[in-house]
Image (cartoon, one colour):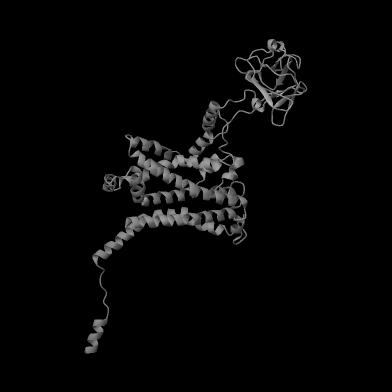
Length: 452
């Protein structure tokens, strides 16, 4: 009897699940059904390509032969890939730091202006421009030709304001007619000249349409005789449309104005300098007896200043980073501004009442309190710059594409842009993923901590 009772009480009896548990299970099922399409899409567009790229990176260019880690070792032997890694490192260090700092400064300053909303809107507007359009805009802005590139147009205007430019960059002396070209681009008279002598120095290579406004015919000036203690002469364009005699000033030939002419003594020292008039004439007065050489400095024929080679090998990466900053400065400013608006104002007011100036408040209170926001902005930009592709591919011209290349562009060039080696390209993609993952994990963990 006792054994039977004990057996009966020890036997488990099925019980119904509580009503609350069934509701939780039903809710989880419904949630899973709603999330399932997103999970399928995520798997098709993210998980599968990642796994496929990892597998593809262990095969050769054709995808038919397993090569193990050869693509990874080849990747770090390739000079172009090493340059891409170096440029990516420059991007990661420079662009997020500058953008975060600039965004912080602008966010603090915008709080103190009257039209803060309009100013934020103006700075945020480039975010609405696609990278393709921004690349085209800056490709034109950085153009070497000042008539096309706005930056070089401004640089040339500023340069020409403070420094005169040559009016005859294409001019050259006519061979065998009294002038000898020097290695530095200047010209010397072939024979010495004494006071009381008049010389005519003919040049060619100047289009009639390029003559300065106000240039006068040189014929009258060329016929003047020099005083006994002076050397005179004419610098002229030795060309007459439809005829004329070489080495002789014809009636229709024009003088070359504003050309610097120097007189040097037998020791080579410059004793006098003058500039030609509108008819090309010049004159050295009160010279001592002796022999002189006339020199036309190279500055008369120097090529005009054409601005900065923004897209040359040395500046192409900083130039593209500048375009990137134009797009993302508004993003950094708005996020940091949102964090700034949430700061406790009593701490700032207490610091002001204690006598702290604005710089001390900014350095010791604002920045430390904004540290979580600044970190999020910085890490987000780090992730973004590692994947930059459009701006580099569009802005950098073909000859300097390798000098500006980053991992994303190198991956595309190796795989599809002529290299046709998708094994090596997949290895580059895996490398890029491994570099981005730590920043992504850091950002996710920080977001979870802030949620708690």
